[in-house]
Image 1: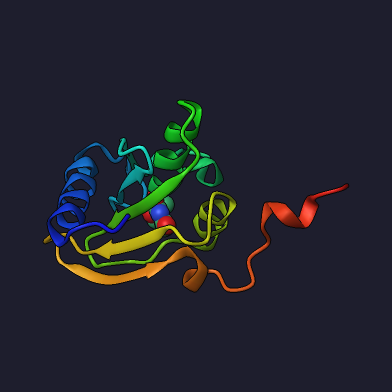
Image 2: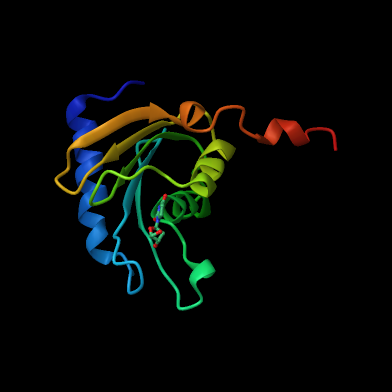
Length: 136
Ligand code: THU
């Protein structure tokens, strides 16, 4: 199923709005994500930092884990919004790849402007995927 530009923009706007809840006392870099599943449900996420820095969780993973924890594992599209149109980190790309290389990824800036539309496959070529572990 392909989405209209209006649906894509609304996913960007949701991620942008979610950023107000980012917990970012250390980086002051709010990130928001909005994930739409194949059933049409939408899960948002923000980055949640920690005084023990490595325990920080990225916005994309919060959105994905919220979805998975509610039984949703088939994703259509995820939007990621930062002030300056930053791209998802390597760890988040790997977590996205777990659930499908065809998922569309939208990156947008703090004005809600689309910076790039791509796929997980393009963001993480030659990904390590679940099928690699079959029969072990
Ligand atoms: N961050 C994300 O939420 N997603 C990414 O893909 C890149 C980085 C967060 C983690 C941290 O809270 C802040 O951005 C700076 O690294």
